[in-house]
Amino acid sequence: MSSSTENPSVSVDALLTVLSEDLDVDRKRLDEIVLKRTLISTDTAHKSADSHAQVPLKALTGGRPVSDMNVVELRRLMEEHDSTEEKVIPFLLRFCLGEFHYGQRATPLLPGQHPAKETVEVAPSDDTSDTHAPLSNKHNSPSVVFEAFDVLASESRFNHLHQVAGWVDLDDKEVWDRYVRDVLDGCVQSGDRVFEAGCGVLAFLSAALAFMPDITIGGCDGAPRTVRLVKKELAPQQFKDNFFVGMLPDCLNGVADESWDVLICNSVFQYFASHDQALETVNEMLRVAKKWVIIADICSTKYKHLVEGAVRTMQWTKDLPQYRTYEKSWWDQFDDQGHLVSIRHVRVKEYARRQQRYVVYIEKNGRKKNTQC
Image (cartoon, rainbow, N blue to C red):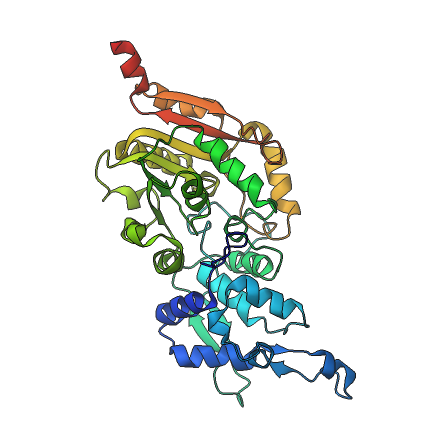
């Protein structure tokens, strides 16, 4: 992660390492693709007779290796000039992080949407060749997801981890930090062990650690590349082994009963294939939790028309499958099991979606405790 607390970012070196390992592409070859095939139009080139003259990216870094830069720095460098049509860096971003937050997605396609493509392409290392070598899309993420992340990754203003994670409308990190505090709502205490199901690039957990540095964190995510980035760069050294790859709900099967104080899941439930999958996930989270299960950013069925309208009007989400919504009464079943369920909306007024989304708090065995008093 960048040393700057103002604009934390993933390093280009981490992206290249994860991509080369995952695709079994030689790292040197991949570096050459990025350094030579990312061509930048310079001011000098514009003034020359050949308006299409371009120079390699490495010619504009002042001798600094591109792999030493983080993504934000690289975007800014490319923004100063006219970036290449090939957009190698957005390709790396969408390929490494493209499954994040959508690794769980299995909701049905809407009319006019298309199923997953089998391959993704990148230019080969042979500069004389006009052909493209296909790279297997092992995880079969829908092609629209890659397109959506291409839009997201090419926007240089997205500097913070929560924006890389998909919260692009929150451009003020202070608002995001307040959102995290509000969602936790005092349920996490000093020294607690906190596990996030669908942890992504640690946007939520990193914010929690910032104001509660003595907690222990862990998590799982459906995107292998994202988890490798977490282990390599984003998670504190002492917590790296607490993160693993897996899809909800099955990925929690190997986690011991009541081994974590608080289980959190933020903005994932809208991506489930069915309410049955959501039910299994909540039951698994309750098994693993000692005290609390917190499920945030649940899309309310009452405001389904607003939720779907927002998805269709945002450029980076307009082609994604529909979100799954939940009636507030759906959560009563956990109350009936002896847990204490409460529901509320986020109190951070700057959070534009707070009307149509809500947070669920389940205090494990809360009703049983009250009965015994």
